[in-house]
Length: 250
Image (cartoon, rainbow, N blue to C red; front, side, top):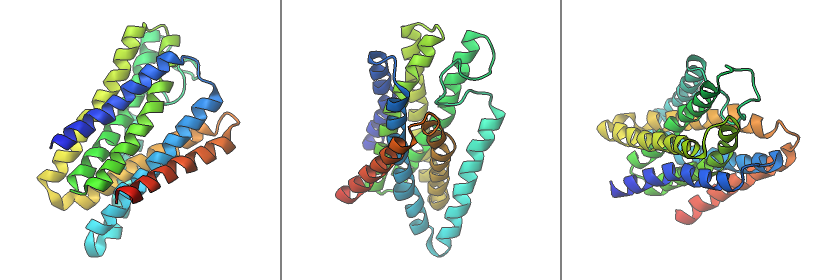
């Protein structure tokens, strides 16, 4: 349990670390932000496949692959449904770049809400990993999410400052998105521990949410500014880093 606490704090704290870096580099070029977000996408992709999807098949037994397939789609569809039901701005789009309510406060709240929407299932994915009892895969998942949270924390600072939010409130809002991830970690951990029978589905569900975020938001955003070649190699680098980490820890 102590390891889960430390991991939850580490996963959530990574967003805060990214926010601090974001304050140091308030103006990030598209090339740089696309590169670091692509690297994060590769990390998440690898963590989802290695730490969640493949273990789901393994724990599912005879019908494991079908449970995994259903879980992946349910996870993706759930996040898609949340996207449609909860009004928010695109997670990685700077405030002021889309047509949305003119109120400055509403813009900021919608922007932060978009991040929180996706941080909760990411936290759940980390918690489910520990609920499986496989510490190695759990650490791979948590490490992947934490690495992804650092650049995310970096890129959300500038839009909020540009919207006129004070540095103090900007840092507080960025930190709160990390708190959401901590809550999600414990939700995932306790859900699996209450009923071990849901483990294969829970792993696949968490993997599906992560795959959805990578495909629906991270990759399109990093390929939208003319730096797609570098973004592609950054994604491959992130994927291979997590693959290497899994092999070394294993």
